[in-house]
Length: 426
Image (tube, rainbow, N blue to C red; front, side, top):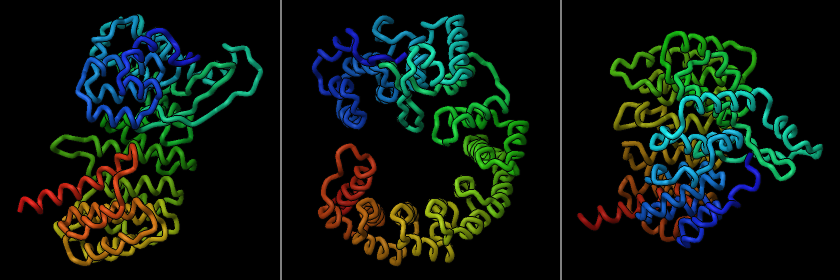
């Protein structure tokens, strides 16, 4: 159940290999692991690191190693954590790593059905309640928010030296999908709304699975939530609708028209900031002046989260390429000087990635080099590099190297290196 993770003999034998990657996994330093994986090509060590990550209950690091080519099939069964322990740990990332395609055949259907029942029990009982029952402790439970994989987080409970996470609902959803079981819309929605955070794994897995169905019944159920009195229900419905259109890779793009219509109307009446932000995110995924006009209505909204979504949504594909429309240009220039740093950075990135090379934009990005926020400065450097403006070079030198482990900073500064390569080649 996650007690004393990483302290077994198998983990120790992996650590004894002495490589920097093994040491980083043992230290549970995700960013260092990522950095080493980008430079290392020894697949044998990656496989050993995967074993250690699983034994140490580090599902997020195990997932990262899989992304960089670790092969679980080269790990013996006794080198990996038993699937039951992974399910009880409550970490969907850990369970998913143990059910990788390369080793899925090690688990017969009867075992998977047993794990389904186990996950259902934990989900219905509640992680904290089940933890207290199993430990028999009457002490207070420590609860912290932790990242479980690259995109989602969940709650982690510790009592009497035992730690579990509350991702059993997401584990249940994943096992059902694997076994071909189709729960109802209401069941999946209830699992999501048991956690009032959109970034919880159970919420994300439920929304993604429903969106992947792409059928009219699911669409209608999600659309009906638009008028629900509870904002969390509306937020879930909006996300399912948005992802349904986003995941539709058919040539017909069946949901484009219905999605645009519903989100334009929805944006005009939504009062909750979190729901409105999701609706505006959806509008930004559509091209054309109808979506742009709906977005621009909120460019001066009092909440920075809304203004940030407007800045993000006014991308080059929501205008008439290669230039932004006049209204979009005016809004972006204003948002680049917004009181909120995240809004300024987002607007700068939108301009940077656009095909509109009007000097008014390069001058605005050059002005942002004097911003008080480092990420805004870096976004401006990135934009000037993409627009082939020499001012990016000196600005990058002034800002110095990227901070350790920051992929965002590395990406911004890499654009400068690419600009210099293009310039010198010419």
